[in-house]
Length: 392
Image (cartoon, rainbow, N blue to C red; front, side):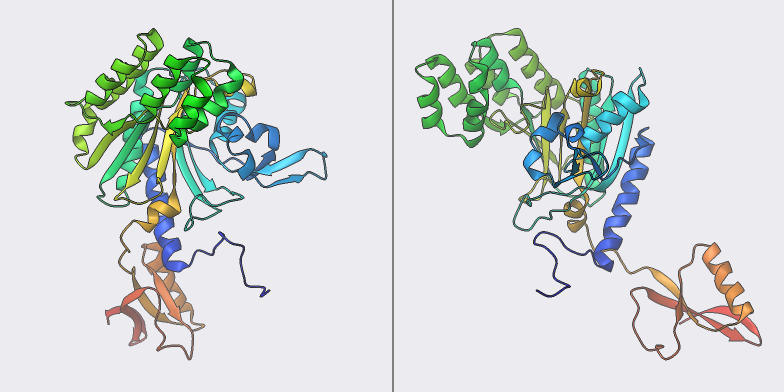
């Protein structure tokens, strides 16, 4: 096997793509800061137990694991940064007030999410801790849409899901908790025959309700909540169910959606991904029929319990590589072309230009005719013993 061959799903990021990703990353962090989010940088590797809280349990099979030679404990490379940020809020910061944190960094998966995806996604995201109200959910949705728009004026499909609704129904009906995993898997896969076969003998009414909501998907807007009325018609009249439907309705009626005419809201009652983790509305964002979600998020209250402190929490994360791939190729950066000489005056001129923010590319002797990544539209030339910038 050639030494330069990389593992499947692992790739180098070459100059033009790296520049596009880094430009987007910087603009994202600037945007997050404008909303008052503080940047944190968790470690790439931790003890496995710390990474298995919350969504980490769903990603257990996605984590690369090894044994720590110092402690003898199992270590894992992070597959998602959210549990780490929750640990920082609950244990390291230990603030009582609302806390806003943002992050960016690589994560590692044992398997890629899609055929064209990477096993080393570059993740960026934001989390709010300490507020249980819908206001926090709406803020992260608003911020997530703005983050996506940094990659261009795309048509965005935002799928909402009441991830805990099936669990709520099972608890209302008194279903054996040992069957919850099976039921959720069948609802997610929309395997209605098997769902009926599993539940009809136990609770026929529950089986029919779950079959109905597993296929309940449709558009949602401030002026059209027909999908929610359909849901109310098939779901039991219960306080928890009414709370879920009210939350979805208030989300659709939030005034900031008027600022995003190219964002289309929909709701999928059968999307049960992360049901053991999410405690409120979850959401996935898709761009222009792109097959993989570019961002995901939702509410996950009480995840901090594993770190010794219960905290309300909601947030989102996005995949920078996927999002950057949908952005337009930026124009080549303009630069000043300069010769390479051991000349103090030339060095001073180059240093002064760079201090002003100019890109200066010094050409190596014998390579004057080679093309650079940058568009050199000016040249630093010596006239009458003085170095001057002239148009090329």
